Image (cartoon, rainbow, N blue to C red; front, side, top):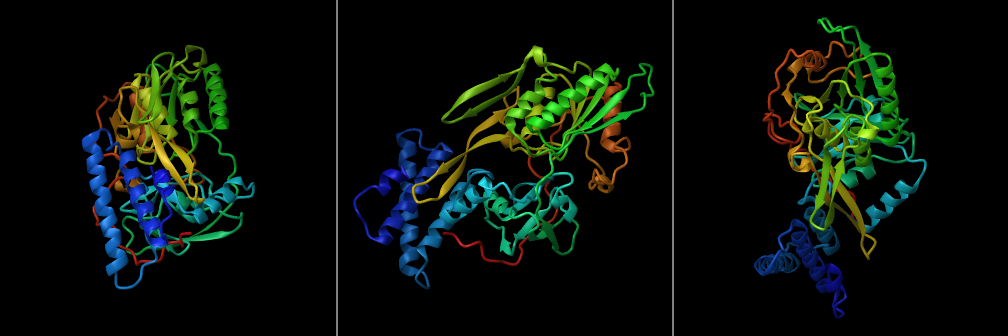
Length: 440
């Protein structure tokens, strides 16, 4: 729709900007699914009229002559972010920077998985051993500013751009953390991320009549290499006579959705792993494959609010097919597919085009994954030591609970916690305002 309008008869600059912004507003309603018939079209065009009227008043009545380019860019950012945390608009300058960094083989990264909270950028998970972990960032941190720019109304894509650069370069972030009285000022030194590895630990023989040995595997991310490593580890554990498995997906929020499907097939002899559906996206159903199964023994999966994306697909597949129980708290809720759509003026959209659904039909993006056995750690346990500081996971409270479940000593319960980042009891932060990065 915006392309058709932009190809209309020549107009003066101000009129072109009004029509462009207004037509893109209608596009947003289409993306929301509102334009589904005559009545919906009428509602959309009424909204278009109101938007055009507002922009006209800004032009005519604002205290000073507005920068329409900046106003329009701000409207487009807000339009996309109103859809979900992962849809965003990139101005021509932002998109050019995005392409440069993406195509560069020497880009340093932070190791953060990001989303939105209270309108600000928030940390979903921190990759072990990453610059972000070394700087002291934690799950649940709200980034008040990045490189001096406020993150209020900043898109996730824009934040990821600011948090990447030449290896060795630094980025300063202002962090609002629960229970902290003042924002923390932290500096990240960007680096090429080392390929993550599984952490594998074998616990002593369980103190029950079965005498079964339990293995613990912590998954930092879901990539092709990690899934291949997981397969080899499972085969090795099976050959060694290990009969129980604890699969830790806490703080696992990065990777590829396709690899979550591959990982689920290591455990599931039958059933539906997930479904992928969208308004204009052909529905896909991912089924288990008995030929690919390598682990047939009991499994317990640990999840938390820092479990996101591909890890949610894996956890939901195991629990949804009654292959094993999930323990912990509700996952974050982000498993979806985004598409990059370049625009004629050099800008681009990142648009969510499909959602992953659990085996029982629940949209993960909207609801997250509820644990079979809910376990909320105490206040003292909410910030466990990092993998580098921990000598063993045996004393982790959730691991202990998983051992009980695997031994048949705990009954399942249904979680009723809300999806998304756990909400603190305090009001949303209102940090000192800083300018956004300049839009092109």
